[in-house]
Image (tube, rainbow, N blue to C red; front, side, top):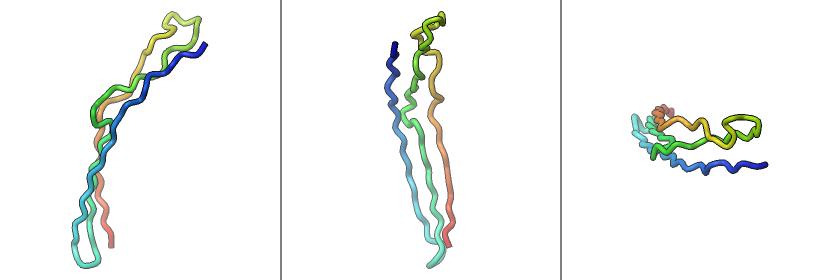
Length: 74
């Protein structure tokens, strides 16, 4: 028997800005957002027929996450 998994629905986004330090050097700042709309992505249902939780979804993904990065180019 096959149990259908829930649909993954997440939006990831990134913004970046480059700043000149000198003629040859620059700094790039980058902000990344994962699961921007904060939708839960549920795991697959329990597929073992012998389990009392058969067919139930018992866990999901974590919420929204951000990441900030800086890169110096020379």
